[in-house]
Amino acid sequence: MRGYQRSLLGQQEAFLPMVVSQDHEMVVLAKALDWDLGQAIAEANRGEKIQSTRGQQPHYRALNGAVVFRALKGCDYRTAEDMIRNYGPARYLCDLQNSSWSPDHNTIWDYEQMLGEKGMSEWTDYVLRTAAENGFADPRGLCSDTTAQEANIPYPNEVGHMNGFMKSVRDNLATLLKNSKGLGKSLVNRMKGAFTDIGKKVRAHRLFAKTKEAKMEINRKLSKLTKDVLGDLGNLLEGIDIKVNQVRGSGKRALNNLAEDFHNMCQMMGQIDYWIKKGKVAKGKIVSLFNPCFRAINRGKVGKQIEFGLKWGINQIRGGYMSVFMCADMMTCDANYAVRGVEEHIRIFGEPPRDFGFDRAAWSGEHKKKIRELGVKNLGIAPKGQAKWEVGPRVKDRMTRERAQVEGKIGTTKRQGFNKPDAKTNFGVRQSALRAALGFNLRRLAKDFAAGGLVQTTMAG
Image 1 (cartoon, one colour):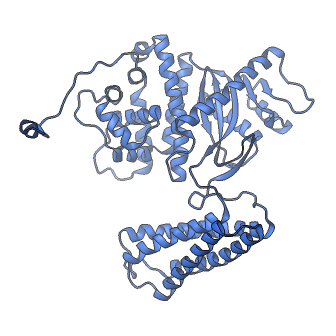
Image 2 (cartoon, helix red, strand yellow; image 1 turned 30 degrees about the vertical axis):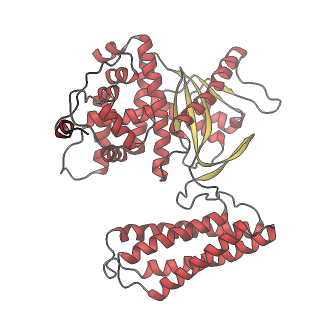
C-alpha cells in the first residue's frame, strides 16, 4: 500500500451514488408497507417482555426493515448486517439512505427475539390482510395441507443419544469445575471414569459389532453406564449450591445445561430401554436430546417415509398467498389440522372461506361436521374408497387445481429457509418457519403491487 493510501485509510467513508430501480421488490415494499403498524407490533411485544422503561428506544423503522430483509433473503444475521450497511435497496428498505448508521447482527438478533413468534405471525397476518384488501388474495377460497419441517440434527439412534449425552455432560462439567469450588471430587472422578467407558463402548458398537446380537449387547451395557452417569449427575445437581460453591460466569450456564440434559435424558431412557427390550421404537419417541419437541413424522412418501422435526399446517389462500400454523398436539391426525386450518383462516380474515379443500386424510364425518359448523359451504375434501365428492363437478375441478398448488408452495418455502434451518433451539426453528412464510408472502405482495402499479395509491391511503 502506498503512503498516501495509508494516510487516507480510516479517515473517511466512501459514499458512492447509486441508482435503485423503482420496481425493485425492496423499494416497492418500502413504499407499500405500513411501518407505523410494524412499530405498534414491536411495541406491543416489547411491553410484554421488558418491564423496565430504562434505556434507549429501538430504531423501529430500521429494525423492522431488517426483519423484512431477512425474511426476503433468508440470510443469517451477519450477512444481513453487511447487506443493510452496503446494499442500496436494503438501505432504502430500512430507510437508511441518508444515514451513516446501520444495525449490527447483535441488534437484529435482539430485536427478533423481542418480536418472538407472536410478532412474526402478526407481520404475516398484516401482509395477508393487505393482499386481500387490495384484491390480490381472495379469502373465499382455502386449501390446506400438512408438512414436516426437517430439523438439522444427526440421525436419531439410541447409541447416538447416549453418546451425545455423555459428551454434553463431560464438556459442561469441565466448565462448571473451572468456575466453581467445593464440588465432590469422588463423584466427579466416578463420572469421568464412566465417560471413558461409554466412549469405548460407542466405538466398539460403530466399528466392531457386526451382528445384531453383538450390537444389542453393547446397547445394554451403554444403557447401564448411562443410567449410572444420570444418577451421579442427579446427585451433583441436588447437592450443588450457587452461593456456597461460588458458581460464577460461564459456570452458571454450564449448570443450566447440565440440568436440561438431565431432564431430557430422564425422559429418553425409558424409550431407549423399550427399544433394547422389544426391538421396536417407542410411540412418540424424542429424536433429539437438545430439542425434545422434535418428533419422527411418518410422511409415507417414496424415498423419504419418515422426516425428523416439527409438523406444520399450511394454508393456501386463493391468489397464491399462504400461512403456516401448528396444532397444540403436533402429532395429532391430519383431520384435526384441517379444522385448525379453517379456524386460523377465520382468525386472520374474520370470516370463514366459502370453499375449502384438503386431501383424503381429512375425510372424517366428525371433522367435516366441525368444518361446516365453522361456516364453510363447499367442502372439497378428497373422498376415501368408493365415496363421492360432496361438491359439484365445477367446484371439484377448481378445488383440485388449487389443492395441487399447495405442494409447490411447500417446496418453494422449504428452499427459502423453512427446511433444516441453522437455528439450534426449538424457538429458533419455529421462528425460522414463520420467517420463511413471511418472506414468501412479501415477495408475492411486492410482485402484485409492482404489476398493478398500486404502490403510490397505497401510500396515499
